[in-house]
Length: 356
Image 1 (tube, one colour):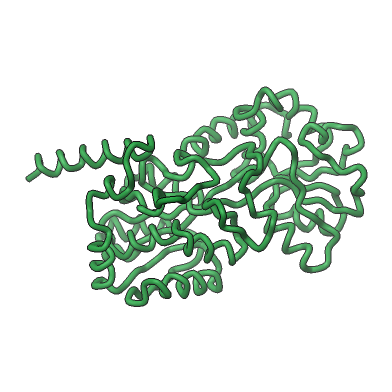
Image 2 (cartoon, one colour; image 1 turned 90 degrees about the vertical axis):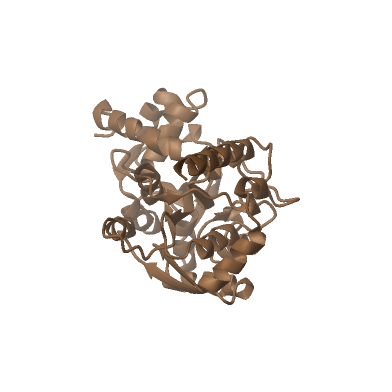
């Protein structure tokens, strides 16, 4: 029996690898009849999803999912520290969580701990579907998780402090003397958005930016934190805050603040949110159906309507144009591998003296 399982496991691994190379389709990778999985999911009739999302957004996603799968009841567990809760459940052999949705801070450790069930959603290879990112930046470690949408990160800009005629068009522009003392920058010595820009400048695009750009940029910037920057730009304490998400700028603008989302010619930074299935979960088929649904057109559209992130499926247009990444230049999109690599950049930032 063990030998048979080992052979099957190797076959699945090879098929997944071929899928990532575009040589086989997802149904081949699964080696299962998808309708059988859906039927089994309906019999399970239950699904528990852990997520840090807002209660209102979770409710809307559940409604959209149940329009297609009315027999599967979705229960959400929302909040912070949910990965620790899953670890406790696994240790006690009383697993409640079926599917988990979270960013790199939960997905990367989960992959490293070996608690993610390998699953390649058939939706990824649906006929005629195109994606805004290459498959190796959507599928995590051959199928241990799937990045389902991305936060778009760039800058937040106060139009009264920095008038339109002198606003920066590129990251290179931020080194100009006119911006000295006007820039609030998230501290790259801690986990946050600041380290993403520094890693992109130093490791992803050293030819366009590099360490020299970082030093020149920091002559103009003031170290702050992601949580403070929105208020600092909204009140006009600083004119440009970065890296900031589209959501931060939109929230301030809705309250009447003179702020806009500011992008640069070098491209956007993307921070993804993943869906993954817990190994040994009580409703494995329902979890697969849900993990696949979020990557279908209906699932992508449902998430896009919530306005929290950019859809990865081309042709799905979000209500906020700043969240439409189709055809736009991308400076840096976080992956499992680059998230790990950022840890080295963070150590460099801590010892370089540039950000003291």
